[in-house]
Length: 92
Image: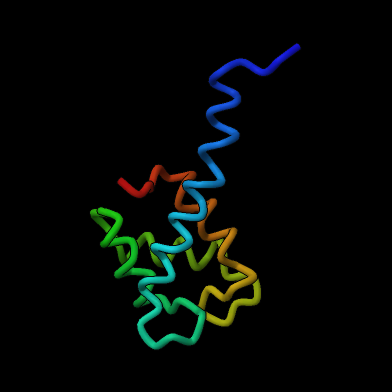
């Protein structure tokens, strides 16, 4: 049985949306170290329209910072992006 249109659209849209969000988050890497600090995350969530960007940054770090170094590194970016999508953040 062939997938319906909604399933096909979701499968195609999500990777693109994930790539856009990942790129947007990287724009907020102010010092160019390839990682996002809590302050850089706060600015990123503010840029995404969060009404409580500091709180979003805190919870994003709690969720995605697997090695607990206080930053989101390259290995943790996929977790961060999935977190942002889960809470409805998109590039408009």
